[in-house]
Length: 252
DNA sequence: AACGTGGCCAACCGCTCCACC
DNA sequence: AGGTGGAGCGGTTGGCCACGT
Image 1: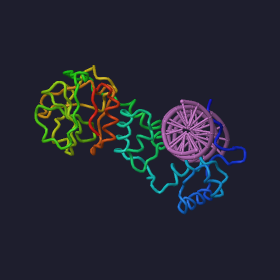
Image 2: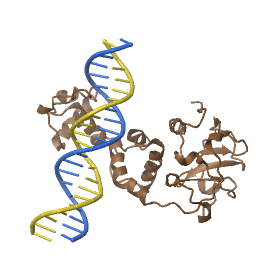
Image 3: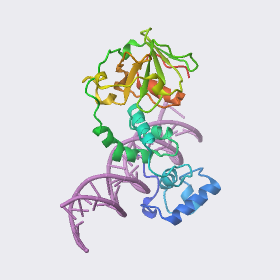
Image 4: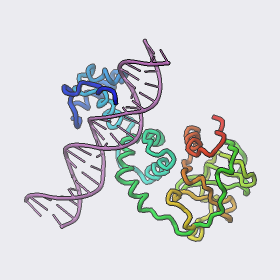
């Protein structure tokens, strides 16, 4: 069974915070910081448990929090990150500055889940399957030279390419740190590109070769979305953990 | 105007993780 | 190595509000 409650709840206030309590908490933390959440309410003179104070600060009062509606870009990022990370709301929040895990969780349950459900992928998808389990090597090459025409890149609907697969070497995947205008590299996808084989989980991903002529789909996308304009190692690490098929991780 | 219903979101609860002893 | 306690996480709840009938 779980541990005992963190405080004697009978004497402590629960429910919505009022303005006065907010002010007490803000001024206490501004003055003293929050070393020990458990001890904080007593020291600050609040009839709340430490957990409640921490939650109020982290989710509402902290100056780092960005208020207001989520932008389309933020929503897209949440969708993509959720596809990679699942319900790890705090990990998703860490990628969205100013947004809290609670906020993201709420918007996921109220808006984004519905949005994904409503989305129908195009009907036909021509795929030349290249199984991810054929890829045995992984190389992280952030400063590698320009992408050659033999390589296949991966993108999402709203971001630049970050991953490049060398199609001339069956068992190698090269990850490059690229910042580029994706429209420069990727041909437009028309209806003939898609087939019925595409599962709904794949609907934010597609792959083209660099010359834009021959499209390829990789089964990697059954569980993975690659995204973000600015790649970072933490993100890459999560990506590789998620795609357990890789036998090697990039050097960190 | 009154009532019912559903959406939204702040807050709570139970649990795990992890540092420390 | 095992116990303890604080911090943090994810699921869930409850109350407010907008909208429809």
